Every structure is written in C-alpha cells, then in structure tokens.
Amino acid sequence: MASTFETVAGIIADTCDIERDTITPDSHAINDLGIDSLDFLDVAFAIDKAFGIKMPLEQWTQEVNDGKVSSDEYFVIKNLCANIDKLVAAKAG
Amino acid sequence: MRLEYFQMVDRLTALDPEARLVRADCRVPDESPVFEGHFPGHPILPGVLMIETMAQTGGWLVLATLRFASMPFLTQVREAKMRAFVVPGQALEAEARLVHDGSGYAVVEATLASAGKKVAEAEIRYRVVPFPNETLRAQMLENARRIGVPEEFFDA
Image (tube, rainbow over all chains, first blue to last red):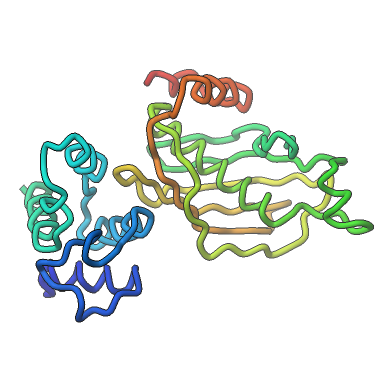
C-alpha cells in the first residue's frame, strides 16, 4: 500500500501538472510548488476521495489567516500528510 | 426560465439533501433577445446557458444541504457535453447529484434532459463561501421560495 506521502505527491503531480520528482516532504504546496487556491481545491477533492475523509480546509485557512498557526502547519507536504493520517485515524477510531 | 435575469430554474420537483439529489423543471421561453443573436433563423439555447442551468440546479442542492449558511459560486465545469439542440418553448428537466460535500467546496454531477432524453451533462464544482452580504442572501432566499424550496431548509 502506498504511503500517505506517495499518494499525496501523486495526486499533486497529476492534478497540478507538476513533475513528481520536484515534490518532496518539505515542499510547501503554495510557496514552493505554486499551487493556487483553485488547484488546491482539486487536490483537496482528490485527497478527500482517496482517503475517505473531509479535510477541514475552511478551518485551516481561518487559523492561518487569523495568525494562529503558520501556513507551514497545513501546507508543507509532510505536515499535510500527518494531518491526513490524523483524520484517517479519527475516522477509523 | 427568465434568461435575461439568469433565473434558469422554474420549479424544484425533488429536493433531498440526504439522498444528495435535486430535480427541477426549466422551461425555455418562447421568446428572448438571446435567440435573436443565437442564432438568426435558427434559435437555440446557448450551451453556456445549459451549463448555467445545471450549475444553478446543483447550486440549490448545495444551498439546501448547507441550509443557506453559505453560498456556492461556480469554479469549474468538467466533462461538459451538449448532446442536442434545445429550442424556444422546450421543457427541460435538470437533475444534480452531490458527489462530494467538501470543506469550502462542493462537487455535483448534473444532467439536463428533455422528454426523457439527455441533452446535456457536466461535472460542476463550486467554491462555497459565506454570503458576501445580506442583500444576496435575502435575494437567494426569495428565489428559493419562488422555485419551491421548503421553509425547513431556511433555518441557518
């Protein structure tokens, strides 16, 4: 079974037409990979489907906009994957 | 349909957020300035208005699902096909199914049919955001009542 990172990187590569090799765990989806908000909705849809979850994008965006957390927390790929794993675990639990 | 006002849906015939389904009747007007240009001597409903009709139908489902707490705005149309001409006076049945209710976005699959035959289809995606002002929300509620959205969906 593919790791969360492999699945997410594959989704980003396919959805945003980004070379798979340029996507690393430390890549920031927006600042490094240049994914805009509309494309990120496509990524979110594909992730939601692939993992059977509903990523709380509105909440995450609000927290970043309010300055409560750095965007790194949700948009650096390894952190995004960790949050996906939490959502999957919460759903299973 | 009142094409000039972008009121594409005449009446909802089914609205079931639990089943993620909406259906609507939409009758193409006999006359409209739209048909004077599209096309002279061969009036047909523009494909973009067929898409708009499907988008609005799916939009009502999203609004009802969210109980009018937020507003869906069209962001993407995928795999759109216009399979047949639609002419003035033609009765259409629109149907949309909610494929995914995401956080801040929604995805529907919609069709447009006439006399049981599919004339258009598309996957439609929306960005779902708070109403930008009370004027729009009030107008959407008024439109919702006009097309028969039950009051139980207005409790946001």
